[in-house]
Length: 239
Image 1 (cartoon, rainbow, N blue to C red):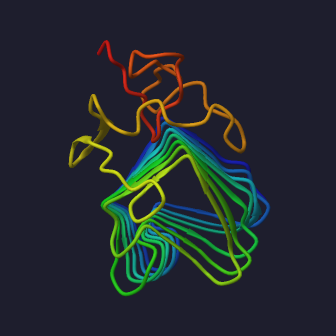
Image 2 (cartoon, rainbow, N blue to C red; image 1 turned 180 degrees about the horizontal axis):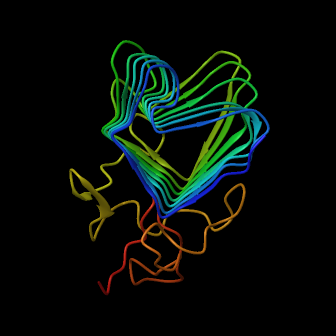
């Protein structure tokens, strides 16, 4: 029974012989992580970066989750029996032996993912290089970019409910190179197809700022009204 709040922290290069290399959060908790870096952590079981088992109501806002590893599932984040909200986060270069190298959503864990970017995550032996949603799990993915993850972007178990809207997913209905600034810089370049194509009414609400703290929305294409960009960063034409 806990209600941790983690703000502007760096949780790097930790190791767990069990679950939760960086953070492990247990039953009946409300975990809030804002503007933090959770990177390079390792778990011998599930949840290389973060492991959470509920009932729980975790929130991740404007967090950077790169380079974590799980010897089982959920290299970046592993969540079970919780109502998760993940906003303006970047998942890059995470790995797992099995499912969901960036994000693993287990049973009875309704998860909302809004304006997040997934790139370069790797599942070694199974599927769901970016996201895996297990049986009885549910996800609402909106205004996101899932690109360049291996072996594929999203894997949903046969009894899972995954709703993807206004998102650029490699191999999905919108499947266009997002034009990242660099391989390790997930900001958008001018001319990116992810500029001004999101929705202002995602499930759970639109964040008022992006991961950098810039206003969301900006009129990134200098045409018509301002529309939200996809991913964690709004393109600023004046920068």
